[in-house]
View (cartoon, rainbow, N blue to C red):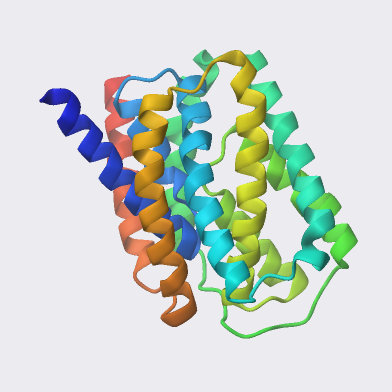
Length: 249
């Protein structure tokens, strides 16, 4: 009964993570603490998080492609750079081990929660492009991809901000292309975590099912309504779980 209760909680949290991630990014701020909460070591939690996140990011990406919001040809180079960056991050985090991560993860989560709380709202209108797409792929794709492979939570928001601020995408278009690169980085990190045996598949599949449902709902909401309700829910959940992790330590 206890195992079933835990599985149900993880399913619901993954559904919420998939919903939030497909709308505004930051789903890892929910799923990573959830995996740490059930007692997984930091590196195992990050690897299992990548496995379950692949389900949600693929679902949202497929829906955006189906709706014609993503230009795959123009995004191809960014996909390649993101893949290489995420692979490098996943390899490095496995070499560093989990002791450092156990100490810094709660602090990073709180920092990201404060960022979401204080950052200004991005616009729904296209704006002026500041750099070319090749430079964007090399700088943003590689660096944020590396971060996602190494740690991950908040990646979607960083990508979305970069698309808006540097390429001038409106919020809807930025969110759609963010999910393409987020799926790329999730998949790359997962592939390089697999040889180390860090993924707990029983948990990943339960959460992956929730991710599928949440991402499907969230990606449709992006196309219809926007993101105004996401920020307070994300901030409250992140701060609550981060506080618990700090108290446990």
